[in-house]
Amino acid sequence: MFKTWIRVLVLAAVIMAAFIFVVNADASTLHQVKPGDTLWRISNVNGVPVNTLQTVNGMAGGNIIYSGQKLLIPDTYRVRAGDSLWKISRNYGGIPIQAIKLANGLNSDYLYVGQILYIPAPVLVPASEFTPKEMDLFARMIYAESKGEPYKGQVGVGAVILNRVKDSRFPNTIADVLYQPWAFSPVYDGSFYNTPNDTARQAAQDAVSGYDPTYGALYFWNPSLVGAYNWVWTREITTQIGNHIFAR
Image 1: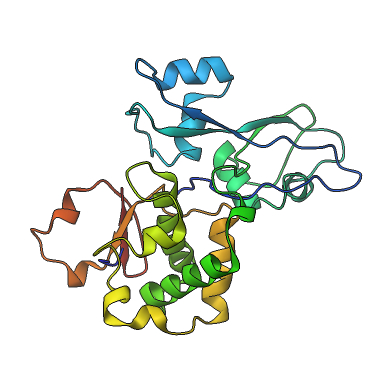
Image 2 (image 1 turned 90 degrees about the vertical axis):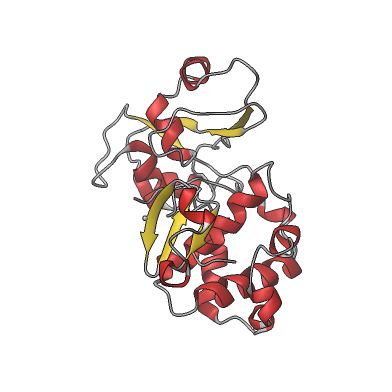
């Protein structure tokens, strides 16, 4: 695939049991967009601000939704005495603290009792649905496409793959996304079959755990390798990490 600018997270994939001594946490839910739906209506029905829905679904300020699209509706959590971002993270199965901060526009770790937090606990691609074989294939593609890139960029490549799995316009399994004809060039040049390093495997785990630094990107490419008139430039650019531009 053509190697793949602003940041975000679209949370996808892992919700675990609550920890001992911590109040049980609910998972986020999914809303499948119906004809006539608007972000404003979905926001009001679910009690979640429009800007929060945009953030956790990688919409980067956009309001356009389409029938059949699946939107993550974050869980709502009220801060209690003794809470911390670390504790809340553990309560929600280890969701990255940075994901919670981004979803709530937090610039520090300071919390106050009674504060309402929106928790983008992953629900779209449960970890239990990923076989060891799929995780191996996942890490191989991350390694082949982003070896030598910043770690965040490697996670970003993984996030693109997972975002495709979640998007109805693409196949719905990791393997089928990776092997989709002409989607990823490493499948054809053979680099996909190299053994991934530990960094690529960790990037795969972090992507599965819900970390998406790409604003919900579905594509990525290296601009030095793509011509000025290539169709990829028609896509909405979301961020650039290292040598890769990410877009949807």
